[in-house]
Image (cartoon, rainbow, N blue to C red; front, side, top):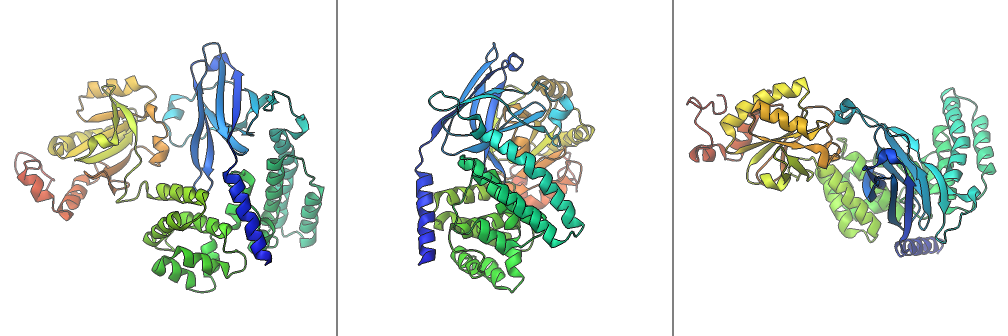
Length: 499
């Protein structure tokens, strides 16, 4: 009976959360140094794969003024990227925030072109806060101030406990420090801040290597509402249930049977609930979603089975937010997977024409990310020139240039005389993240139906022709393309596939 009451409370909490009306958040300020710049505000909507979504955008006026309105249902952490800075702060529905942007420091050409560049994380300087009635709330209860004050006390203790645990300090000392800290916590009156402090305190048990998964699961998650948008909740959640499938699998082969052979979402929920650490409710589903995502990048479970499970989750879950999370996970794990469509994009070509990936349907596409200044890329262009001459009738070559200026890309192509398309990344700078570009060049092969064939694909000068031949031969297309005159028989005036 008690478990039914708990479940009823959780259902009511979800129903209430899903029916909360969005309220407007206003962010405004003045900084002439940013005149003409576009300010884009984002927030994480899926803490399993750290998927960011754009929630608001505005352009700074010539006089430096800017205002953006963002509809939100819950308090949450948001961020914006400004040159070399990654700026973060917390906002609450119905509140207005006057902010001071950090000094404008644009990325250097090298930083802008490098997929390895990491912006410096800073917190937004908030000048004033007003509620929906235009009144200034009690400064002592402002969300950012509360969180900053908490972290100032929490972070040193967290670091010290990590050192103490590594040095095998007596258990009593660790427990005493944690208990003293938790006892000193008092409600602030701000729901998000109190939840933040509660779940951050759970990290102390983890770093001090005290208690364990079952304790933290029961003390912090079982029977409590799921806080999808609270950064501290999701941080502790991800740590607590990390490698949970493997943790459960240490006692037998049942989990491998359910995942790899039965591919049963409902069966997996029932199995994990037997452990006692997870009730068979929304929390169990959340743990399953997290671990499907994590395990996809290891070889402990069948990828095909994990994909089946995520598809089942989308269909079977009764919780809309879980359906959204499962969809986001599916998109993330399949976006660069062979047989799936790669991330879409719309970029400007050397002729200033907006081109999307659909434009190249009907041909194989060799998609390469490069710059016009990188020596390795320059060598690849030479190999691509020969490839284009021999196979341009059926193979479309597309280079996405990460040069700082569009004019640099266009002038380079014109001077070099290359005939294939160059597209500039500026219209969709996130394309480098979407394709997980970590080094230049990075290449992919896409088939005429728009599905990934090779991810990544070999470099143009690394036996790429042989790879293409195997692809065409495996699909019975090589002879067909020869009949159409798209590929000349090797040994004629055309090099064919170099055999």
